[in-house]
Length: 390
Image 1: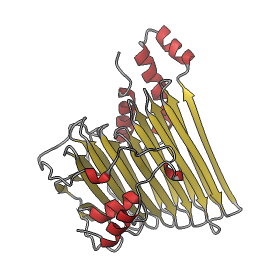
Image 2: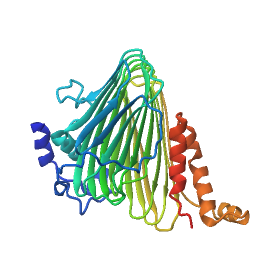
Image 3: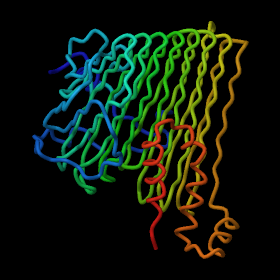
Image 4: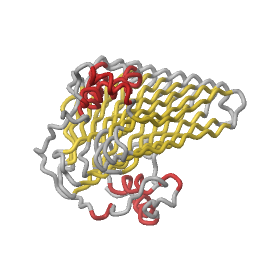
C-alpha cells in the first residue's frame, strides 16, 4: 500500500532540526530514516523482553512480517486495518515528517472497535516487536470505543534483542464516543539502539472518559507526541506518564491538551528518573478554545536526576482563549536527597537499595493513578530494576 499524498509530503518535509521550536532539545544528527531497510522479518521471532504478564481477552502480535491475531472477544472488532477505513487519518494525517512517513509506507495496522454498550472485563493486548537489525517497523492502530462501551487496551513495544539497531514509527488514533470509557496503556520498552517516533492522538466526546498510561523505558532517541481533544461537554482525560532513562538514552515527550467543548477536564502528570548521561525533554501545552468555558486542566512534569551528568528540560505552556477556566501547571527538577540516601544506608541498606527505595517513593503518586494493578506493579518493578544492583 502506498499513500501518494503522504509520500509526497514526506519527501517535501525536511528532517526536523534543533532550529525547529518543537525539536530544540532533540538533535537528530546521525539519523537517516531512509537508511533503515524494509527488510523481511523472521516470522517466528519473539521477544522475552515483555514486561507485562496479563490475563487478556484478545491478543495481537506485530512484527515486520505482519500481524498475528490470536483471539478476540464477542462484540469486538479486532482485525487488520483496511486502508479504506473512513476514520483513518482523521486525527493523524501527514503534516509532520514522521507522521507522513508512517502514512506513506505503513503496511501493518490493527482496527479495534468495541460495540455500543459492550463492557470487557479483560484487556485487549497488542505487542509490537521489531526483530530485524537495521530494519524499520511502521505500525498503525485505530481504536473506536462506541457509545457506552468500557474496556482496556494495552500496547507494548519491545525488541527481539536488547542490542537491536532499528527504526520504529507508530501512529495511534483513538475515538472515545459518548459516555464510553477507554483505558489505554502504551509501554515503550524497545532496545536502546532503536530510534522511536510516535504520534498518539485521541478524541473524547460528550461525557466520555479516557484514562491513559504512557510508560517509557527503552529506545535510543526520538519523540512521542500525545494529544487529547476534549470535543464534547463533560469529556475527561487523564494521562499518566512514567519514564526512566540511563546510558545515552534521550526521551522526548510532546503533550497537547486541546479543550474544544465546555465543561471538560484534563489531567496530565509525567514523572521521570534519569541516570548516567541520559536526557529527557517534556513539552506540554494546554489550549482552551473560546467556547470551552468551565475548562479544568492540569499538567505537570517532575524529574529526578540520579547522576550529575543527567539532564532534563521541561517546557509547560498555556494558550487560553476563554475566560471562565481553571488551568494550572508545574515542573520541577531535583536530585536524590543526600539525607534520605544516608538515612537508608544507616539502616543497613546498600546505596543501590536506598536509591531504589527513593525512586519508588518518587514515582509512587503517579503509580497510584494507574487503575490496573498488574500494570501498576509491572511499571513499579521496571522503574526499580533500572537501579544497578551493586
